Length: 253
Image (cartoon, rainbow, N blue to C red; front, side, top):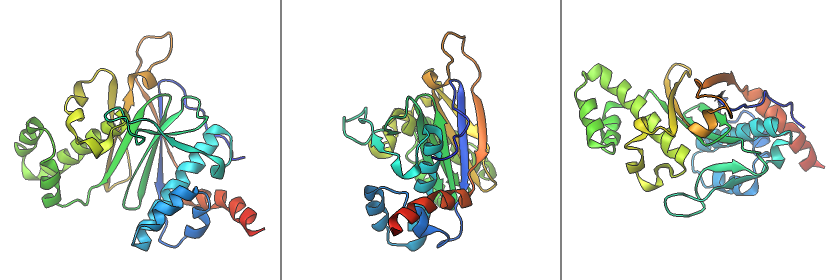
């Protein structure tokens, strides 16, 4: 089994950052940690770089889940909850036998962000390299009040404000389980929703990130509401590839 990580306790948000290594570095080895469905989805991606990033991101998730659940990365069984908007099987992902441990993952470029909590959680990360034109296009999806607030800012501040607004919006939608599939209407009241905490996360330069953590995950049973404790760690890409070595050995037999 993998080395267990510090347990995620109520009132805590554990955040992990993975920097994806150059394309081709351990790609085939890490892919052995993925289940057949994941491998099939990865194979549909046309660009080798995109396949490499996807493989490393999902292999990293399995390594972290295995460490928390006390099992092997290749034995982690991922499932999907029911979507609260339409009842379809594409709600929040979860690990079978996770014992209330919930997680969320997001990636942008060579950066991957993972979040773990004792209750519903969503996370999003975006590259700061987004162009002003793209920002204006995507900002058009936001509620009118937020668009007006962004438009009122000086140009140098507008892009940073947009990124912060967008990652909080997407993190919230992932947390409630609908994602972007049903639009962003459900996120209009996110900042005022007492059932959720929106947290701006410290990530490497060049990225902007946020998490949405449910009140259930941030509360300690029998205690008054406390400030959410955020614990941030780095997942080394070498450790992900190393964790896949036993899987490669077994397949080679």
